[in-house]
Length: 417
Image (cartoon, rainbow, N blue to C red; front, side):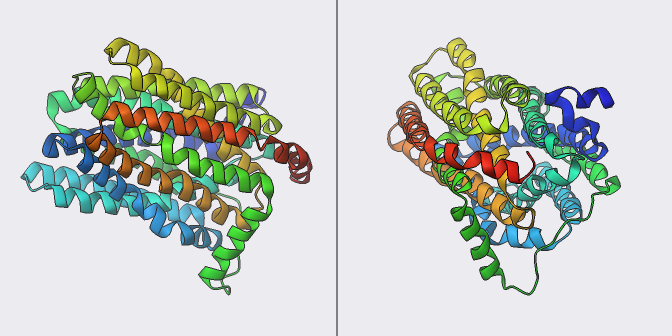
């Protein structure tokens, strides 16, 4: 594995713990994306309503808003590996429960909403824990950006493979097969966490009450200007960019007159662009270049999504999806990488929870609004509005570049980067 450390984009794979995590996550996330497509299609088939799709998606991700303030406090005080093991077991049991309810014919819309909320509770703990634990899985600080890019690459490789497979699985064997396969896939990452040995880390004091601990993390985030601006603009960008997760099923069914296979192809095309984007970042974008890269990608996504909203041809829609994937994922990975590089270790969980709170917490509010507006107006009109707003966020973010130029060098040097 020594040769891997010589390839900048793959440097993190020379660390045993990260190799275990990366291999298991590739399989687990493929199952996750299969389940996400199956769930989206199931809701659309049962309800025939864009508004209800938005409500179910909001319910799924709302726990990030509810728990986001205190998840980071919990993470900074506890063993991350034990939390990850528990989250994977809960995910496996959740998928098997949905499969069982589908099998006996008892899965109703209210039940779907409850199950979506339960999955959201698991996700609200699982995702920040994974983000906070990556720095422990690598052996050298210079491997951090490689690790974050590969982590996102595995997510988007799964986005490419999972929906494409799920589209045909749903067509051939029904949604139940996707939920069972997701449970099986998650045993891989569960095994990785069980045999993994993470180094000891500095834990935050348990004497401080949770509200004070959260305030300390928030005050720290707002005091470090590059972290502050990165978080604020990521939150705003996520509000508008995350709408593509609900727009794609609506476009596939109503605008492009397609089925689950078409939706899988659109999501797969996004995955292709996303994988190219994260590998390009890992190989070519240094940590000091991250602020400008983030702004360019936010602007680029806004332009691509505006173009997507104007297209009604199936082939053209598929062709533009890789550019959507490249820009939206590059912006997200860049924002995450910048926060991870700058944050103090004993506040990592709290600051990353704020990052997740904004990127996955505010995004569902945008999704809920998008589902409603797609019914009041139409999917194309609201996609156009979201694209324009994402573009404006990127342009406004770029106007604050002087803040990064004045502070980022000294902060990175202090971290040995």
